[in-house]
Amino acid sequence: MPSEDEIRDVQRATWAGLSAGWEKWDSVIMDQLGPVGAAIVERLDIADDQQHLDVASGTGEPGLSVAKLSPKGRVVLTDLAAQMLEIAARRARAQGIANIETKVCSADDLPFNDATFDSVSVRFGYMFFPDVAKATAEFARVLKPGGRLCSSVWVKPEENPWTTIAMQAIATEAVAASPDRDRPNMFRCAAPGYVSALYEGAGLRDVVEWDVDVELVTRSPEQYWEIISEHVSPVVAALQQVDEPARERIRAHAIAKVSAFEKDGKVRVPGVARCIVGRKREASDTSPRDGARSTDVSRSTQPQPEAAP
Ligand SMILES: C[S@@+](CC[C@H](N)C(=O)[O-])C[C@H]1O[C@@H](n2cnc3c(N)ncnc32)[C@H](O)[C@@H]1O
Image 1 (cartoon, rainbow, N blue to C red):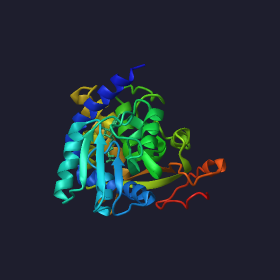
Image 2: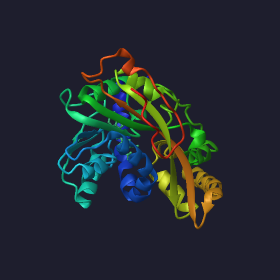
Image 3: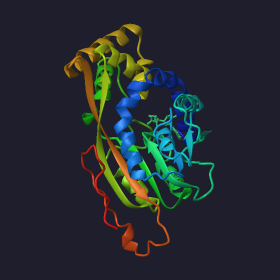
Image 4: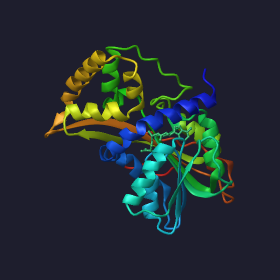
């Protein structure tokens, strides 16, 4: 079992290596993940002077969207990989967003005082943290009373052919390590209620989960492969383990499979993410029942109604 430091070192190096792919395919990736960012932002109830923390920001979303909605506010984008945050800063400049700052740090050791932020977002970061409970406790600590945390993770592989097509193609040539629930992998947080339980363990209340559909849209099956093989962490890692002829066979296999998703001159491959929102207790929360669990897992492109207090 690797130590927490070793996990962080591997993640830092992995995402430094993937950063060029994320910048190259920025518009395709942001279009795919956009519905999830929108769902997160909608649930955070952003004011025009919001103090917001985006954790595992990568190239900047959903933190940059929050910054646009909050012209008098401040958004801090944080990530373990400096190279990802450099792209986020470039994207912010290109979009004319000035009310952001970036900070390299790990989710489980945030360099901020208690009760600093009105809201915290974590889009597709949870599955990479060395200690997910410690990270959640940090998010709760830096939230102001009444502040909200909203995150997203991937649901099970069967509902995410946009990535499983590539992984199945790789499995025809290489033995993939079986995913370990306690170590970083894309589907580590996929079980319904997994992230809700972390929120509740950190004392958050009114916890609600809901599913959001996404679609990866590419110009062709060949472009699908180019994009996936340059920015999806397990795919990039697995391809480094095989030789060039095997890589070519994997590519051909994936292209043949993804062709089934061609429609109207594009390739449209679906996926499903889960969003989880919760609120930090405030002084007016008197009854212990206020924090009663109300996990609602349903498929929707719209957030579900809030749990009754
Ligand atoms: C899939 S990317 C998500 C980026 C962005 N939030 C988005 O949705 O486009 C995952 C990010 O998590 C970051 N990460 C991994 N481990 C981390 C940790 N321990 N603390 C903070 N960020 C971490 C990676 O560097 C990477 O930028």
